[in-house]
Image: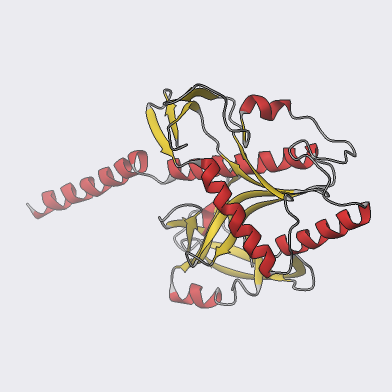
Length: 333
């Protein structure tokens, strides 16, 4: 009798693990976060090609005094003539706009309908927060220098129109997929394709101001980046390591204030219980502005079962990833 119950218990646990793996695994959510990261980096790379000499900052987290929290900004494009705050909406399917400016997104392929809060109003609010942050750090922006755009880079994006009121195009702040593909590179243009009017009289003052702005943005708070095997990356916040006490003691020197980058390599080719992962970490170099690490690398070996606790961007859920599945982690200041 006891043997039968024990066998049923084992079978039940095995079935539960298989069921959880196929129906409730975090892989689907990780893929969603990874696809969002891929969309951000793809847009950032194309913007830097479109605007020669420009710089794009990805995943900034700007402090908001009113809410006592940090607000996520997808991209900030800085050229010699302007700065643009950009929200990337990787929306696929049919999109309609209600009377409040909210987007109703219907994806027939996946049989789901989502409602996005007014993206234009959201990014307007982010612009005001960024302006306040820059002013606190000694960068007073000229009027009209900072603007905003919402970019929809998914080729399956289709705008249907407004649910109420007159039919018309999207607000000019929204760049649809068709408009996005038609943007042409600027070659030594005095003005941006998105903003009209000169802001500075001389080339030197333009470059000096953009250099000052870049020096502030490259040291602004930003998301951490976690990469797993298969070249999948997500943005978010590294929280801590989880595992055996002796492994945690070995990892205690890895702190955000001292370390900027980590890579992980499995040292055993076999899946033994006590297989190890070699953690290589780079010390932060405060002599260089922006995300960088020195040539000083340290290493430590811990159990492959040791985990990382990570909170994906724009999410309240906490995710655990075994070190054996992680390729690297980049830590922001």
